[in-house]
Length: 255
Image (cartoon, rainbow, N blue to C red; front, side):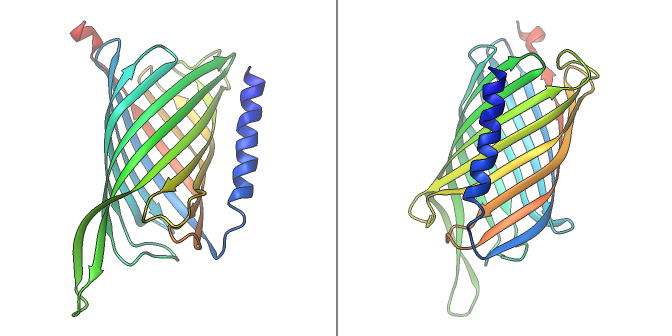
């Protein structure tokens, strides 16, 4: 089983490299991404998930800030869903292919997760649907920026396959050092989207360390291929991503 899933992960890497190697014009940029994530266990079937992302590019130039919140329904040890979640995003003007305006974005999302394990390998399949409400701007006759509200005509589906291999312990436990790999591919559609083929891919390889049952750190290299909405321009962003996880368990207080 784990061989099949490992092969699937490698196949995803190969296919997505091919998909995103044909776009022009392309710019190469360095990135520095940081995240804090927390899952609070309320009882045996309900969690509350929160994360905060601070994303920078080309030597800590602000790229994007993001806050996510969602209740998680735990169906079994392997399966969980987030029936509805909220995201607030601040997009900055950045990089070698800058947008004309800074904007805010609000999202609703739904998520399905399936987990499996084989020996020291663990696998996480995540399917996420997103309804994106993006702030629209224009300029008036005096060249002043006008806020035209939020458009809800963009949608996205994204799938991530993550694999972890424990290097120094029989399983993930305090003191465990793990190799982490994932590939996530995005497809967008809607009236404001010109390019309807896969338009973003993220590939990560790094190390994770489990300090305690509820505290972990993961850090490594991230490659992001991002095709712009016009279907012509593309960013190849390669850099570092670090995520700190601190979970809480309130179930003993509520059970």
